[in-house]
Image (cartoon, protein in one colour):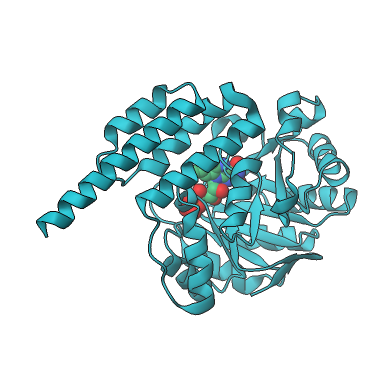
Length: 334
Ligand SMILES: Cc1cc2nc3c(=O)[nH]c(=O)nc-3n(C[C@H](O)[C@H](O)[C@H](O)COP(=O)(O)O)c2cc1C
């Protein structure tokens, strides 16, 4: 079901959350192949943009097949945030500029950025309006529901961003203090969805296609934003899109499919970042791909030490042989 962020059309209601160290262009392209309607780049520092840091600039490359996509920026001061937004507006192929107001990590919060603004709806209004006034692409804001359980200003903050001209809001149903503990509070997300007139992406604890449907129904959001469940499992996006469209649950990815996607992901990451960085960055992702595959513990440990694509590929292929032997043995027993 199509919806829009400003003038940007989004073909379905399944969105991939921004994830630092994960949602680079290699992974976003894979997510698109598996049907994601919209993807968001890992957060980009306003200072990195200001100083034209080479690594930061390379993080903003957009592959033509990714559209529609958003680039997320974070920062602490009005000046640097506006400059960063203008850079994304005029110098990148992003369709949407997303402001991070949810990041809980100290590195970000201590610079008066990320989730810190959630304590002050006026600050939210001010920052968003400065950015909106300075750019022509649609601006979105990604928030958490509040700073801690005593300061859940979710509705006030979302409405402040809307008044300031945001084209859509994404909200994770946890407070900053929670980090990732406890549960995402979908009741608060529902209050926000009811209050907003602009599109709303609900986020937090969607682990399956059924969760996605439940969130759309219970929260009343325009789209579900999925983070951790996609790690090592972009296949999940295809199952979710299909389930929302037809009510039919496709099977989970088989070990063969998981390993084939993992190898493709590794290869694309190396194309993007070169052998040295690509292989090392993939180690974390490799662990997610092999999770749940029987007899994968030793492969996982070896993947963490691997230094070349060919070596990682060989480890994946060996794991596949092991899994197939195991499956044959089980079938023989039954
Ligand atoms: C590894 C990782 C990196 C993340 N990086 C970002 C980020 O750069 N910007 C952001 O707004 N949120 C970031 N998040 C939060 C996610 O976008 C999302 O809000 C959160 O994981 C909750 O959704 P989930 O329950 O579907 O995982 C990150 C989460 C994870 C697990």
